[in-house]
Length: 227
Image (cartoon, rainbow, N blue to C red; front, side, top):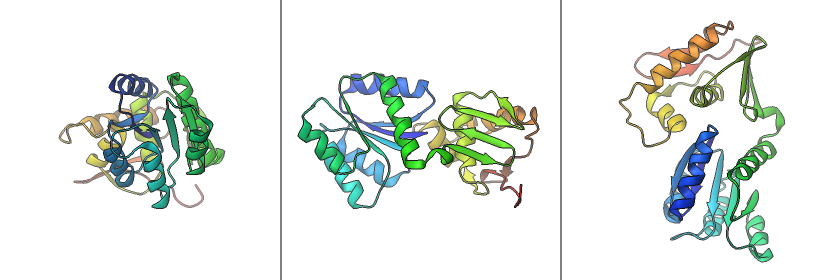
């Protein structure tokens, strides 16, 4: 799951980022409102977590601009301010949830999952392709009714490809969405992770879901109709 996190307090930002990454989230972090707004407009995220008090464009202004632009990405607001008027303003502008500082990272994670469930609906939280099923909330993958043990990175890669069966993703696109935006695009991390995924799926009979596209990247095989 890809998260944009905008927080100007570096100590809090680094701590929360570490906690989210430990749980398998891909976190795009920045400490400036203007930059956060541009990233939210230019990229696709599952959830945007916004501090309200930010240098440049503040969290409420970012939220307002996103909604005016028709961007319906779920937004969770964070703030040290706990006045009723602040909470109402954020919710009226289209925030999906509101969390007061200080907070536990586990509570933020629970709220991220909750807004994703509300927005996507329970059915869409489980991706099904043929005999392969991926639960985005419990983070479990089963194939032919057998549990497939995956690392957090392998899970994120499989989820990314499974969302769009048949669509070809370049290695750069995969790196950006699964590893984040700071990785060297010349690395072979994607190829190595694909190989590991294939081996794990092969053990449970899911041996041909991940296809290589010469000179481009990878895709999740589009199932034949009826499968």
